[in-house]
Image 1 (cartoon, one colour):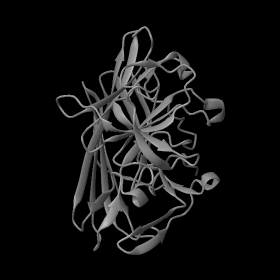
Image 2 (cartoon, rainbow, N blue to C red):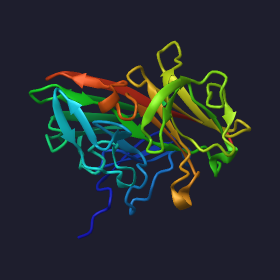
Image 3 (cartoon, rainbow, N blue to C red):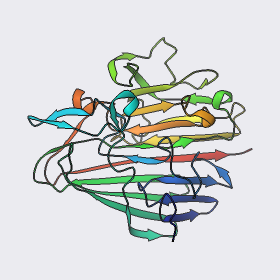
Length: 306
């Protein structure tokens, strides 16, 4: 008997919205509105590629050399990004998640991360995916169920599409006041204000030939504490927006130039609670004490008019 590469397919719906959550990695495989793909996902008979829709915990992005020190102990993680000698995007992308609760318009999936080489800590994790008139809401809850404090970060890797390919013909808006400067391995070397630079995307800008693999922090927020990033067709007919609550003060933006045939077909906008390499730099790092919990919420809203 054969199985699907991403395991059990968990479908939820509300009105014209459809979502598929997968067992493998507990992430998003599809999200559509009125029959239009909002996520650039992957087929049920395909293995997930390029992190599409995946959950990034207990850290998002990269850890330099897979090495860090915490509480006086040196830790070495597997180098899951071998080309750049980094550990990338956490430890749960290929783990099996289980359904904790399910309704027609929502599902909660969970996983227990046990201690392992490089991350000798224990976490109980749950993610709720819920559809409403406001779009898709993703709520993450994590509890340290181990006996010692642990380093932690949360992120996600959705690729958004607004119906135009390549993304060169779209506009982008990202609310970050500060750019995370990085080396060729994607490891931050510092941070700089975006004011007066081409990196300032706080007002909608054409993507054009921009090659983006850039991190932002210090996000501008609305009265409800949400920070919004927007991807839109230039005529305004379709706009896809990603929002984050105050648990997430970092966004990574990636035009996918290294993805071969799927290069620049969609735009990854990645919510993150910390900067890349936060286990070493401490930039946004969360330290969870035994019994302590993390909660954070992000979501996607689509305005389809054309």
